Length: 217
Image (cartoon, rainbow, N blue to C red; front, top):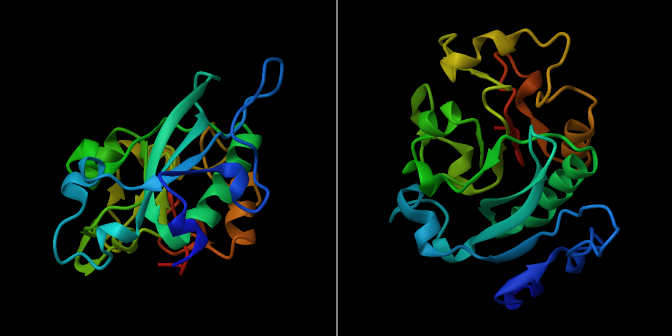
């Protein structure tokens, strides 16, 4: 059992290879303030069920701060595979340092595992045991807990048929000039994704601007 799994019920960010410490004292700048714990069944909800490729005991709940579009710090939650904790925290640490805005960050149980509802709500999320949206024949990488979608309304996904998800994000296919909350090649977030050894879908054809994953799928 790894040190990460032995530490319970929560890990502070400072335990994870020198990432930002847990909080900010009076007068200091805001911090990511991340904690990691076992994913509670209530937060897995409809996003997890028997037969999914990752057992529930290997999923972790990350609770962390993020900047919002209102310029304020908000508390978010995200469920990932235990092996994805470190890279995900590094990526979102870079996003936080850059004050990259995130609309909301909620576990997929709040949407009953419905990816279309989550995208319409501009939700940033990771684990969700489901088929690929727009390609029901294949299991999504989100089912393995090592893929993340960020700000779907600012970062649309185009499936193989040419359909845009969410449909309300069609205007965001025009990436110039970059709007607030867009992921752009070479920015702080996509650079952190690359440095973590993960891959951003914005360079794919057709593109999936909201998506990044450990294996490029």
